[in-house]
Amino acid sequence: MTSASQPSRAPHQNIWPLACYLFSADARTYAFSVAALTILSFFPFVLVLLTITKNVLHSQAMYDVVLRLLRDYLPVSQDFVIRNLNVLVEARRRAQVASVLILLVTSTGVFLPLEVALNRVWGFTAHRSYLRNLFVSFGLAFACGLLALASVALTAGHQLLLQSMTAGEHGPLVRISTFVVMKVSAVAASIAIFFLIYWLLPNGKIPARSVLPAAAVVGLLWEAAKYLYIWSLPWLNFREVYGPFAVSVTLMIWAFLSGLLLLAGAHLSAAGHQEPLP
Figure 1 (tube, helix red, strand yellow):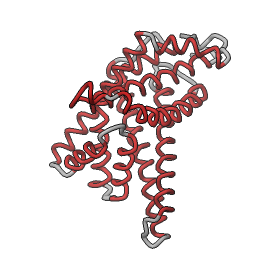
Figure 2 (tube, one colour; figure 1 turned 135 degrees about the vertical axis):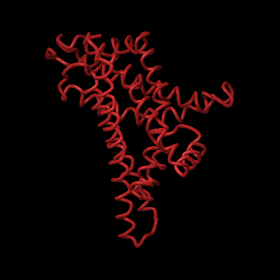
Figure 3 (cartoon, helix red, strand yellow; figure 1 turned 60 degrees about the vertical axis):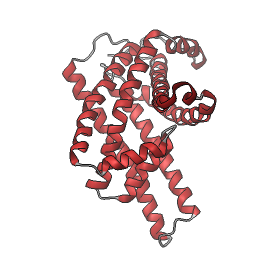
């Protein structure tokens, strides 16, 4: 780890320390912990988002955008997952309330190991108390939900506007334009989420300008890594090794790689910071 009070290295000089960090036991342990809790919280989060768009906002367009985003971001079994989520959305309210409670509990678990990892990266020795971490975790989970909802609303609004201008037709122009807006808004939301995690989650004051470049780079790399991972799945052939558990393993490994990418961005931010932290 590079102390934030030391002079920063040139970018190429950070490659070897970054590689050593990512292969360390600490980084892999934190990434696996985050991956497991992310899987537990992801589907309740999507269920809550679908419920809000359909039963609260009563927007079929936003509901369809959420499903399209889910289809785009899941590496495998998109139809199976979407079909079961649709069933849950139509289920009794008890299932929807349960998903909110599960989301609140698991979101706290996701951010707890992340806080410890980011504190280590930045050199903060003290961690938040349980209640303070709970408060910050709820705030970040709520902010992530708002960013996701804003991205969905932007895409749905754009699609409805184009359809009104083209007399409701779903021609190639509408589909391509909607896809572009969906991807741009989703990547922007991802960058904003990475930025909030880098900036607010460590237990110390970090200048926003120190983490914004890393958040932008990690957001773009995460999007590219997703397609690379999907492309590599036929060669990995998890179904032959894990059988009926292949879907869970595929999602878990993707979450683990995402966790490593997030930690890499934090490490580069700390290594590139020149001013002493308060």
